[in-house]
Image 1: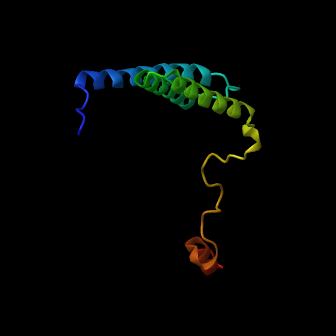
Image 2: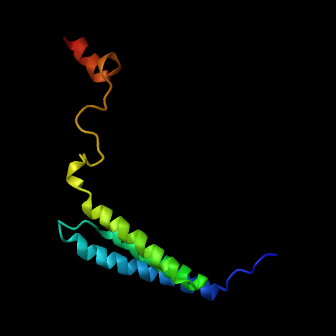
Image 3: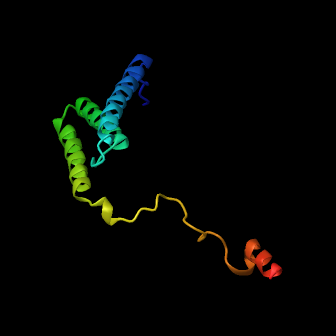
Length: 119
């Protein structure tokens, strides 16, 4: 038997709850990004806020506090792991290609063929 969809007012209320949660996470993340030594920024705090809201809603729907405790534990473990990870040990080139390493070498490179023709 199919269940009826929740009324539009309930769906709107749930969406508004998640939007409010994300907005609070965004504000906290903006403030934290001002500190250059901060381990977390906008995306992290928005994600944590939305996951906290989701686990609170699931705990309320299932009438069990264990769901909320599990969500809190997962976020705590992720934050501890991020705190101990050293981002300076990973070389990050910013996601762009450097120099001319992307250009084909040899005869398949039109610039190379032009230079050879001139000499």
